[in-house]
Image (tube, rainbow, N blue to C red; front, top):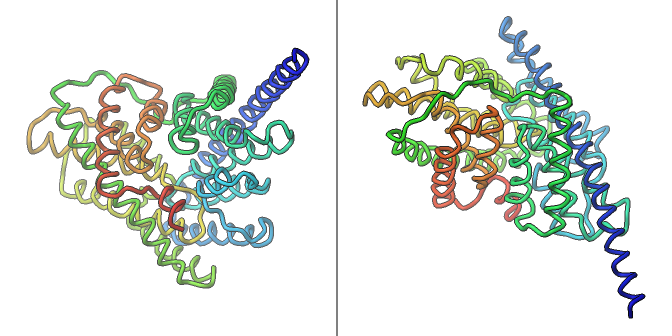
Length: 425
């Protein structure tokens, strides 16, 4: 009996030893992939957007180029398979025998890069998540002893990728829990903690910086009712984003030829970018500009209609990007829309009600609220938002606003883009 017990203990020891090694490898590779994609996208998006700003003709050419390259690569290099985003992860985790094929790593990396740098109005977050999940999926296939822990190792990859993108290990851990796993076993906690630790270490070694550089000076309790209002408005906007994406993608399924989808979506995206250049790519360039000047913005009729147009048309251009074959999801669009919703609410309150709220704070809190409502993951959204600025001064108002936004969104419409796809398509 004692020998059997010793064998079992030895087996458990070997298993956890391999899990730890696997988590370290996954953490390193996923973080490196995420940082490479992030830096490459930032660099080339800035270059191409600068060219488009100098010559508007490029706004009509770039979307067509980007979507065409993606279609050609899909046909000749990636097994003629379309990328389905996070749905691919759900399909894998729900079926024990399924795994994410290795080509999903270059497919999402390259397609995510080309989508954004050529003006596709989405972001690289979902591309990073699926590519990182694939690293975890492949790792578990290498050792029979790890086969029972596929979900946990996929979550380790996802957590590491999100950590590297948003400079927040809490965001990575919570996203893997709230969105992918939805349960926290001992193995999940072990491998995910190791992978995010490796990821944040690599971020520090490579001197990764927060996406937005701002200084939060203070926030006031008197603004608390307005934070609640921001949460309600964000929740409603998240439903609009979700339904727009689902509606337009559904309508595009009636087009049998990829060529037709590409041409229609590229033309409509180009028109949108010509009217509102702020919608180019992930839109973070517009967020950075407005964050820097937010506290000095005076509400005028042109500014009002500009921001309202951005909030209305961003979901449409994002949906067209995805329906036309672009790679991405609603992470970056949610952050983008939330920032402008917060800015608009703050300047309206200050102009018409003399509230003296701080627009910068409302922009940042709006980002978190909109993201929370869009993916129904409030705690992930809280730490992503704090990671975006590497400052936790607004933690409490972000917490409250995210919870309100998520509840409003879920009450109006119980699905997200990801959960609806997972259950209905």
